Length: 288
View 1: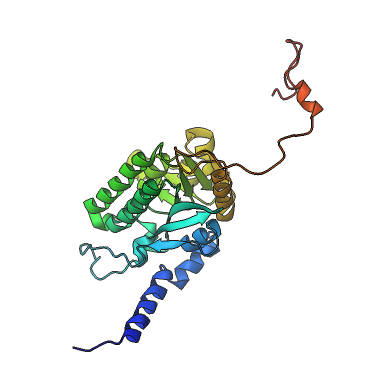
View 2: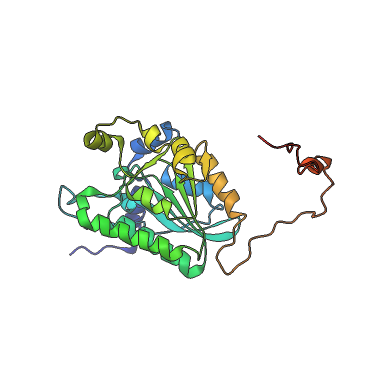
């Protein structure tokens, strides 16, 4: 049996880390960027305070062997999870990696998400879920669905205890639509769609032709379903909205909202005198 020195083990660790950090590979990362999207790790880098992110489960691997899964390696099992600070406040995050098997959620993928959510509940810190996923990983069958069940259950456990914010940054289907709907705020980019099932399935079942944008685009959800709360122009804008939103929210239900320093003595604004007219027959200046 070969005896490995400590330096050899450290070199092997560095190689495994570098490979895992590459997600689905340089070509897929570049394809993601050409679509006007940030990668899973870039989204966290932009979101969190510099050098504050501590990752959990970098070397997580699936255990599936059926349907061609034996020997396949999915770096971080398609999701980046961990803790960071935003504006100096602790948060927990999960960011799905579309470059790894389309961000599909397998058993280990969902367990990672559920575990970091449990840490959020334990520490009383907000949870942010950056969604970019085609839904359940069908090759893992019922194990994949079991994993999603854990995520949904933990969504409910966090509800009312800590703020939950979802960012929809890609073509999110199935469980990637169920989980966000259980959270407090949803921010969707104009490059993203969110639906229970895609246009192809709708076509095969009902015969109706519908585009991804009509089915689950941000305008559809903002004006018809009412599922989302904010539309972002791109990933950077979505991150900025999330950061701004957090600045108004307490970290949990036992804390007060953060307070910003400022002068409470505002100057008088004469235009406000006409907001509510004294004449009941007169329309307000802001009436449509």
